[in-house]
Image 1 (cartoon, rainbow, N blue to C red):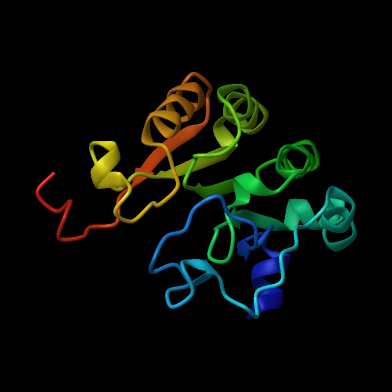
Image 2: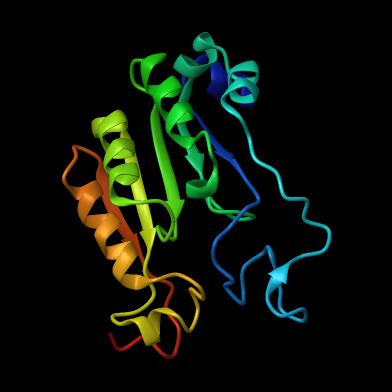
Length: 177
């Protein structure tokens, strides 16, 4: 089954590019709720470099993958130092392959998110996690992430051909908003 999806270009890969994160979300897979919201003790801090990525996925492979999804289960993809280079490599070495990125969007600057959207054009989807309509509400879960910064980054990404979405995790504190 895996091989037929690969051969036919229908394979979607979910890749963790890094275990670094700027947030301390209480229910995140990487967070030790019993240790001041620090990363789990077993979680080694690391990230994928462009050279590693190229060794894993040749130009040929890039054309055989339908979508590379950089999720952020154990770290935020925006923290990966080579994220722009990796996105550019995929886009430059494939004809139809898409890229999707989940992020809390609280790191880097507007130019970074504009660059990512400009590199990926219509073939990239940026999914920003926003869990409140003000800083107090947003910070109940996205601890350490400045909502005003995230909104600026979303605005910058929206000025590109990229698809931009917002993902909100519903909690009791935000369900009515």
